[in-house]
Length: 389
Image 1: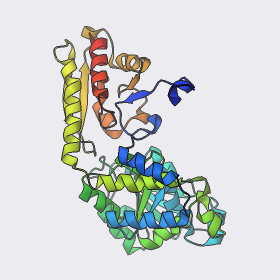
Image 2: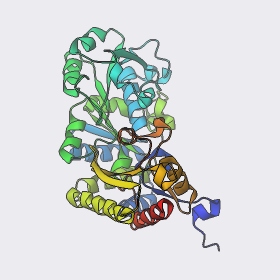
Image 3: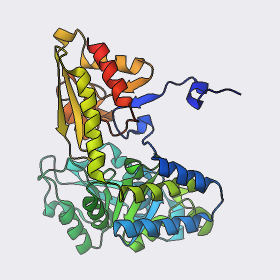
């Protein structure tokens, strides 16, 4: 019997992930307790509709919302939420998706908030309609954009919101006035905990990526108003077998282990000492910095970021002294064994907002440590020291 790991069997080198919870790298690391709970869930069959309902009640109780539902990622949460706002619980409408020609199908979005993933609001047949302009959005812009085909308002909740954008509070206020639900993409807005709760409670439907708090990569949450979450359930993969509507979300299937993993990870996220968590990240950054001290042509600094992981290590390189660019260093890190992925000059579509800001100087490497296994910070430090000297 082979003693190779599954990756070795496939001829794959594993990656030390110094970027973060990226889809390109598999999303998340599962805490030990989450692994145990998922393994336990795998040992027995369960009635899936009951599991989805009970897990949703449990999650809603933690987040302080009327209802919640586990989905196959944040993108699925957005897609199912949009479908719910267009088709509701009407079996005939559900069965027609993504043909929405006979339904309210317009999803309003600020022009300033157009982004790579707004496609998720269109997958079930929604039509994005912009309001505001490239420099500013006002309440009047939103009011004037509402029409008889408006099904929902999309809102992108992240750290890049500026004073020129219409606030979530104002958006929700106007939506409620016109009885139009607001759907937020709040993918990684999970810390501080009070902020996580308020981000779930304020909109009508809030969508989160569960990978960010230690659940499986392919899992997410939609939380919000009970009648709308019930409509989301009517679009889900289990509904396809129960309500006769041939639900659009049949392809967005979840395993029982994944649902258990979301419950376990969310419970842990609201139980751990987050000050200790952030201090642990700081120590890992300090370890990497210790390997860079005294290297001519290299400067490093810790930058606070408005994200759940708190800070990022920024490493600036002088190519004239080092003889290599930051991009070349990143390529050499990737070509080693194990592979190491950091942020450097690369395709901007694959950069986080924080990474884009950090890499405005092309000779910068950015390192995130919250997705590192134990001792991997030492491997990164040793490899960087070797390549830079």
